[in-house]
Length: 456
Image (cartoon, rainbow, N blue to C red; front, side):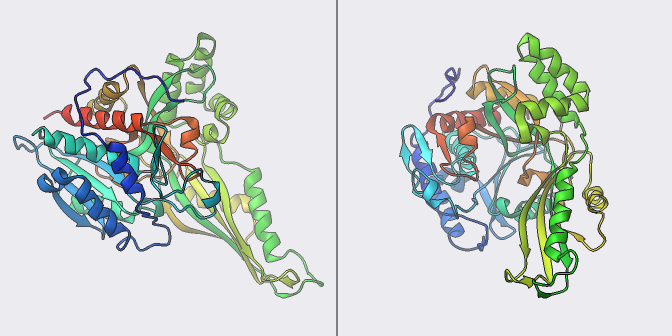
């Protein structure tokens, strides 16, 4: 069941068959984990884009950066030197390993049925890439050109840390590009699972948490398990993980979250509105309300989160392990640093025999404004596609390619103009990923409105 949105005020005709073009994209299994993102099937996908979007490829210059990063440049109608707009998407997807038998349809079949397009990448992020290119293709068919330069930056490796997006951002920076706005995936049109707040909102990410992979490791004396002496390497690492789980990070209220809670209060039932306004000004109360309302997702908005994801150690049931390790996935709250997180891990573990090593990490981003022409443009585009839906800024807890642009421009946002139910959101990186055809049609309309609304 999808929200009964009103028809857009301007529903000018678009090229039919958007669902079939997305289905064709899904059939190319561009899984980046463990793959060579410079070879097949990524080259096959790039060739497919040329077939599906002939006007984009005929009228926009395309450059490869960082291997298979695609940068399309759309020049303005009347020249000028206004700062460009960067619109982003990625075409790699996560694996379905271990999920194959759980899908209702084969994950790379690209089936169109019951008003939905099914398959891995339908939402993350080929659906968003599809509606972006559809909008550009349709505007080109009308002979339209933007008021300022538009750069379409498409990445092949967002799901494996986005080195290509980093290279694209750095390369364009070296050329003097200072974007007026950057827009990538992240938020969506969805229902907010907070008590007392009814309706559907366009959730636009203003900032994102940092992301870290941290390894805990310990060494031990090998030998026969029948004669253990003291804590084994496995036991030492397990104790360290247990101590971290018992001691969550402190609450910290980012400005973005405080603004979100204030906006929710504007749309809440009267008996809840006061509580959300109080929460916006009180981090401790906010944490309690967010945990009560949204569980782990709510708590993640106001504190650094930590999840042990991998454990390794030992070679046999009756052999003392000579080493053991655990991998932690950490999302660093805005206002904190990766160095501060490492220091706190060591302090809480309180065991000098456990090594704490950051394998990789990105700092949390600055917070973009929700009170400027760029955010207003996004809100106007949402209104054009989803009449009556309020646009609200929020904190993105996942990592996106947009994080590489914050060093170069203050206006970086995360929003894919697709409606997603809670069940559909669960399909992202999970089973039965799918998107409604209506969402695709409205997403194309949203991007078209955004492009035609660009100021000179």
